[in-house]
Length: 187
Image (cartoon, rainbow, N blue to C red):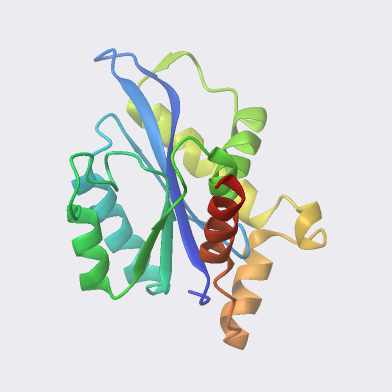
């Protein structure tokens, strides 16, 4: 994986027609290229699920120096102290940063990806989890490999991700700087 941030978040994509539970997708995106490293569909968005998914992503693409998330309970110890996710990040050898609470603009990469997904996929209100998973897999292939992106010079995320990886380019850790700047501006 290029030495950028792996950014991640959950997005609700429907209701499971069998159980009535929310269906959510954990999206894991390379912060530099916007390449979907994974989209994992579940009705149980737990810390264990996140860790299992990131194990797969890191096995396939390597461990980035930093992973970024919001303050969802999967990543954050709501009663204080270190979370199991933070402990796993130490084990992986990566730094975990979080967007400030109630500031989705600081998690902009995944929010933007989710906005594109909502505009481009028409998920049925109720569907089987397997059907939601198939829609996400198809969309991720299209998003990564076919759809050019204006912000990437009309290249696909796959083109940018592969070129950056092949060249071994060091991508600066700007997410931490953005968080610090944002917090300073709010004081």
